[in-house]
Image 1 (cartoon, rainbow, N blue to C red):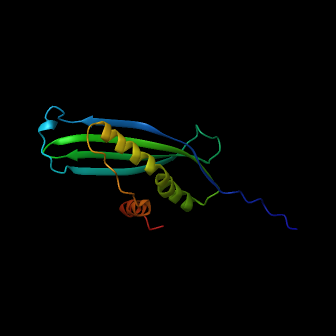
Image 2 (tube, rainbow, N blue to C red; image 1 turned 180 degrees about the horizontal axis):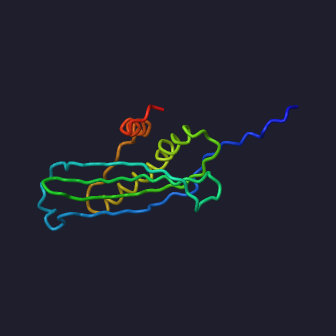
Image 3 (cartoon, one colour; image 1 turned 180 degrees about the vertical axis):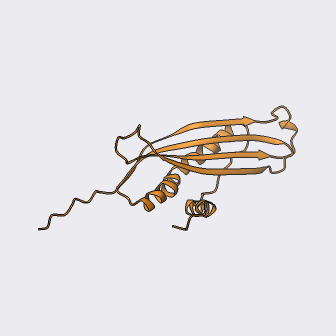
Length: 155
């Protein structure tokens, strides 16, 4: 038998997830009943941020990933603005840096998105508007577009 260094076992797991920030503002509420019944224009902006989380673990395997969503609806006038930061805490270990970056910016948001989408739909619905059901996001394409925008080569 040869003396080989032990290979560290790869691990990827969700520790917790929560709403870090939620803001829902109904704009021009008094004049809302006078708005036309035409379909509003919806503007959706999405971002992902990832960082190490020393509070969660003294090891270098704890990360916080935030899914930031900003949604506004306009008809003739602004109808509402919704801002959501939905966060997950993850334990991720023994992955190469390039794979780790993809996990943090593709797989983690992919796990968080259905929960954020549900929160958005229920918040808008409880605000008196028809619920907004967001289409699934292709986080691979989103990741590649952000890398290209920053001038980084494709993964």
